[in-house]
Image (tube, rainbow, N blue to C red; front, side, top):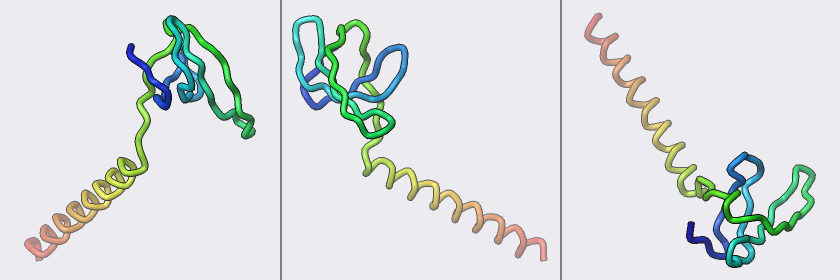
Length: 86
């Protein structure tokens, strides 16, 4: 896995998403925020990490727009069925 500072990773066993701060030969220094807002830094073996699948804010907006578009489409189809039945 090719990592660089700024990438987001997670432990293969789960946990908080972490930001890569430094990359060494077989270890990665990571930063993350704890549940109470504490900042943590730990150097972890590369073998224990995988890239995290993080949605960007733009992706979340697109998802919301797609959901709204799907609801409108469903409502329009239901409305047409009612008019045909009448």
